[in-house]
Amino acid sequence: MRQERPPILLIDDDPDVLMVLQLFLEAQGYVVKRAESCAAALALLRSTATAHIVLLDVVMPHMD
Image (cartoon, rainbow, N blue to C red; front, side):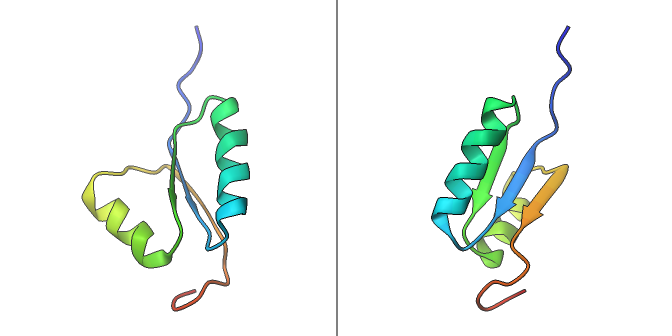
């Protein structure tokens, strides 16, 4: 029986980084949500997304 993986939220202003990380993590069985800004990540979390793990770029425009 395969254990369900926790949902992950990726936050980065570089779309290429987001794409590579998302493809890698989904191949490992994770459910991945992504945001290209801190504001988008906060909106996503406030709406419906649940994230047990957050991977983020610590230097981002407008908010870090």
